[in-house]
Image (cartoon, rainbow, N blue to C red; front, side, top):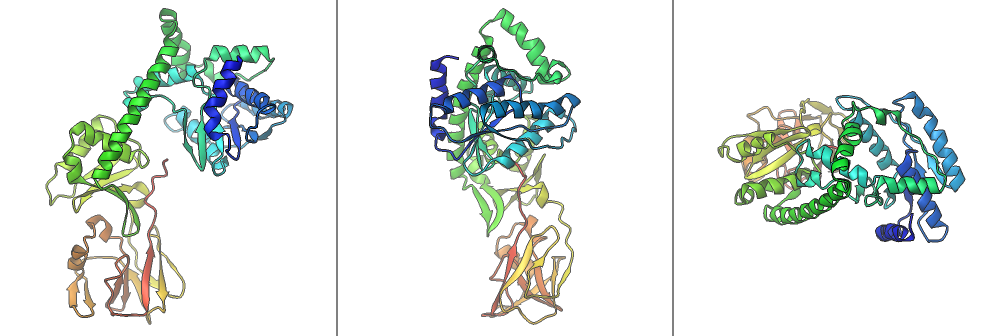
Length: 439
């Protein structure tokens, strides 16, 4: 590998030269073997962060049991520390996807703050990824291929070899006498990516020899276009008053009126970028759910279901509710020791600040018809009080209500709704998470 390429590699890695550590994802295959060897050689004459390797063992085939030992011998020859986490893979509908998710979960867990994980994906892998996504109907973001860098866990994922072809990596390996493992499953065309790699791309390259480079270059153009669309989306989301909280709760929302003023393509672009960290994005067919929700009557309560949660309308805003938030079943509880926090099944926890009121106390949930006596205001319907506070309908059923016998003393989240003025306590609710678990 030429000194010019080494220089390009170091230029790529320059923004992360002060990272606490560089961790190389070492599968034992050609690309990661070359990457780790090259970095070890550079570290001998360059001031680089500490370099180590991580090999994730999936246990999917018997031959893979020998790979950790192979990786250990290679790391020992370089004087590099190796970590080998073992993971369970839930096959499901796609073994490829499940293995990848398990692998990256292990990588994410292994990364410390600001540490970098370096992977060996190369230009041929990029072309394969673009074609794979093309045949699945991906848009601009998907067709931009694998990102050269992105956040992962507490650190960063870096792909420094995306501009290098596999043939060049193999020449480097031969020149330095490196050995690597071959995954037998790579020969099976039963997997979609293998079919592209083994059958489709060779035929394309035979007709257009520079096709791999051309596809990778197209991915770079599309990545730039996606960046511009992202900037447009951020401007539109600011105009739509995007916010992630509601009265201290994790409830992302947008103003619908501001979205409706945009053209339909800009609406979808803004929503894609807003939803990207929250949910797996819908395909083109399921975007009809957005139109149904957007165009529903003001007094309707439409729902747009996605794989990881749902979107609802309330008080002129679009709200995101993740699956863990949904399906809550209210259950009354006696608060036997108000000096201690009370855990609420699937609904966070409650605690008092100050001296708790005299008991016996009970936590209940709305059933309808509740009334509350407020100092200076007399007795009021709870429904009207919640309307005045603009509490969304979907939230009302899980608001904990503090009762003493038949007296409603307080409503969680709304300190203004308390029975006694100037009372010496405040009810604090730590709500459950509204997170899909996606990054």
